[in-house]
Structures are given as C-alpha cells and as structure tokens.
Length: 199
Image 1 (cartoon, one colour):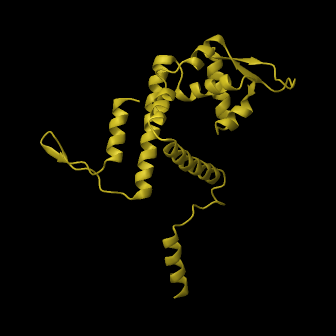
Image 2 (image 1 turned 120 degrees about the vertical axis):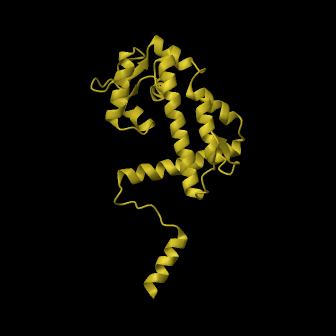
Image 3 (image 1 turned 90 degrees about the vertical axis):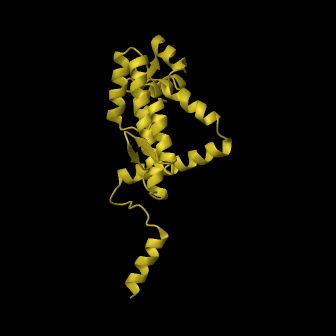
C-alpha cells in the first residue's frame, strides 16, 4: 500500500499523538470518538487504501484490484459461471457481468463450454494473458495483504476474520431487507427505554 495510506491509518489508529506544528499553526488530533466510530474510521481507511491501491494496480497492470480478484477466482475455479462468481464475491449479477465483459475486452478471460453441457450457461476460463496475471504476486493488493497477515499470529487473523465476517453478514442482510432488520440497540439503550415506558 502507498505511504499516503499508511499515514492515514496511523492518524486513525493513534489519535492521541502530540500536536503537530505546520506553518506556525498547531494542529491538534481529533477527540476520541468511542469504540464504534473509531472502528468505522478504520474500515473507511481500509476502504480508502483499497481504492488507491486499486487505481495504482490499474495504471501498472491494466486491471483494478477487483478485476484481478475475479481473475484469481477464475484461475482457482476453471469453468466457473457468472452466477457462481457473483455469489463467491457477493456482487450483484449485473455488476459481475460488467466486470467479465471488461476482462474479456482485455483478453484476460475466455468463454468455454459449461461442464454440465447446458449451452445456455456460459462458463469462463483464463486466457494465456490472464494466466500470467493470475500467477503474478508482486505489485498487487494481495501481496500487501499476505505480508500483513504473515506478520500477525493465527489467533489475531482468526479474530479479525470473525469480526469482518460478522459485519459483512449483518450489513448484507440489512441492505437486502432494510425494513425488516433494524440494527440491534445497545443493551443500555434498551434498559433506559424500558424504564421510560414503566413510569
């Protein structure tokens, strides 16, 4: 990841650092926001870093981070269909179609017959050019993530995976049925509400 993004993360994760003087003016760090908002800050910093790194990959390798992830999935599951890819990557089918079309235009992937013999279903495999991209590791988001994960203990990785999976599941379910799944209220708020109704 870029040094700019690393600086962004340091600002998020170290809000109590000493004031910094720039141009004669002292800039103080932001006040503490509390657990949830500070965690959201980290998630947005991660999102920002992924976007910046994705643009850098596109300028250097010709594909975005998301497009390369699709290439990696097709390389791992030759003959995978567009619907299967959409489910694997939690994407809307129309979004998946656009990604596949762009990769086809770049000659990274090719169509092939479906293993089940159904001609109505389109399956995908990597082209020779796509195979080279699939095997490349340097200069990719994946290599940065692999380096960070290798520096952590298995317990830390497992804990991070559990938190991210729980958030992803909840947010995806909430976005699909926003009226049915209200985010749970903190226990303290529920107790205050209960006391208010009994007065």
